[in-house]
Length: 272
Image (spheres, rainbow, N blue to C red):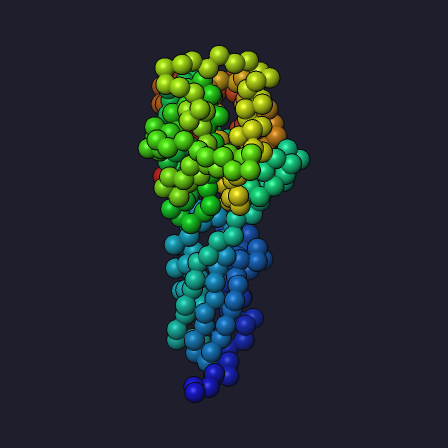
């Protein structure tokens, strides 16, 4: 049996080298942030993990390369193994914790007007996050024009279990939409109280399970659904618009609580 070589390199040297690497969004080094995990030193060999707060980190590969280079530059180190992992951290709010305590983050996707690609953004973002390893749900709150089932290719309606809706699974994303329950060709003519009940049902009455992200495709405009959901969610919202003068002109009318906090650079998007 091969004996483990006594470490000749101090852990403090490794951490000092890694402390030069900063998270560009948080503005602090990865050691201070507690990202460095499972540091092991075996003679000239060093291995460790970098645990990010999201699998969608846009600088994931660059951070791994920088960490590998920094540790390999330490005298006496000849081999470095870096594992990139993620552990999504949740946000807190009374409404979220009461209705969906197992969901870490709720991300509403909103637009000031219709036809600007809001549902397409929601669907693509959900699938992209799932492909990166996150546990994702997609709630179609656009009760007037639900298009998520079509975009996701979901034709089988959800089932019920113990009085709760079991969401449809497509591309690793759990989906619930009013489009599953309203017959084709029929209009949904509902006012505020009924809309609020549907949103509550789609949140607390669905077996979402443990999710890192629940994306919500909101109706266009600034009605009851947007106000009630965005004010109860501390998570950042996403706005969708086309590069035309008439589309951005509707932005000042959206709820101020739905302002986006940062661009999703990992998906090649920018704030428009």
